Image 1: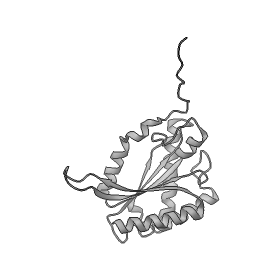
Image 2: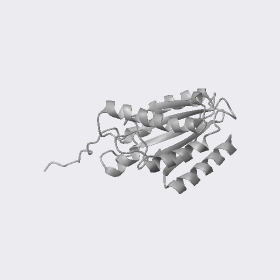
Image 3: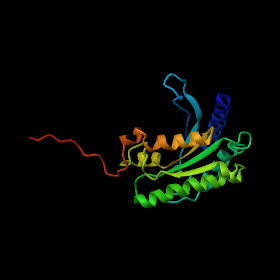
Length: 195
């Protein structure tokens, strides 16, 4: 599996450079069945910060976003065919502007829009799963334009099995890294001292 992830990362990195995408990749591991067991390789996470892929407040790809999505999808075209256990989890994220209901719906629609491109590129529909995270998992401060740009993103998570897909979804629900920024668009209060 390690060779597959390395090869996949190289292909994705090449596309990111061609399309000027902000793409972060990491291999995914879960703890072994026992405390002394080695970690289990579970998959690869490709996080695409989508500034430029979608218009603000929209799940429609921009022309350049469509081009990038098609190139990315081509990398995954054989997923599920060579190894029928493999699964793709497409996760959409938004910044915290707008209502939570709107953001949840938008994040789901963006994940599904990318999923449609994956299917068109040859990924079997039965290996693709979708998740909308709304604004619940910020990776930057929503009080700044730069932070909001980073929070609007999509992820393609390639997993070795459906069991690993379930573990990934459960782990992200309670991931403490998202607590650093919360989902607020209000600036953090400034500490003041009393005279």
